[in-house]
Length: 196
Image 1 (tube, rainbow, N blue to C red):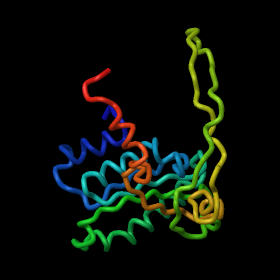
Image 2: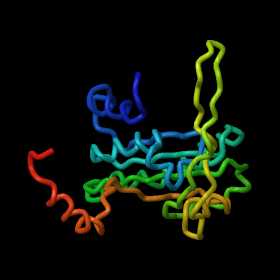
Image 3: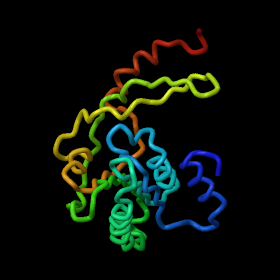
């Protein structure tokens, strides 16, 4: 498939599979998708696509780049999915799909302390862009490294994974800032219909 991870899920659900799956699983991604990263994560986006189709979904990521302990992440992901399977058979539970974002530390099994439910933390902006010239003389730009954690307090995904836990963050897709709707309403009303 030539497209985004969400496109892959969409194509699978609307044509290729031929049946409705019980669960959509995305990942394991080779880098953390915590805090603000979830907004533009392809891994989370793929799981979100399943959720938007009314199917429970999980996005899995490993916190540090590199596959040193991919086997551990796979075992912990499998452990969680096995625990979720009974709830997938419950039709009442299936009426309300859910979306989980799971980040597993890239550590040996002996250093994984379990799972913790956590809220999203926050991250500072990425480091400065890196400009390089390729062999054809064209300038290429690389996004700088991930910024440091801005909110890594107890209860966040950043804190849980730093302590050796796999973080489980329930997500939803409503990005509306409901508290500010009244603030922006007068501005919208002051803009005339059909006027430049």
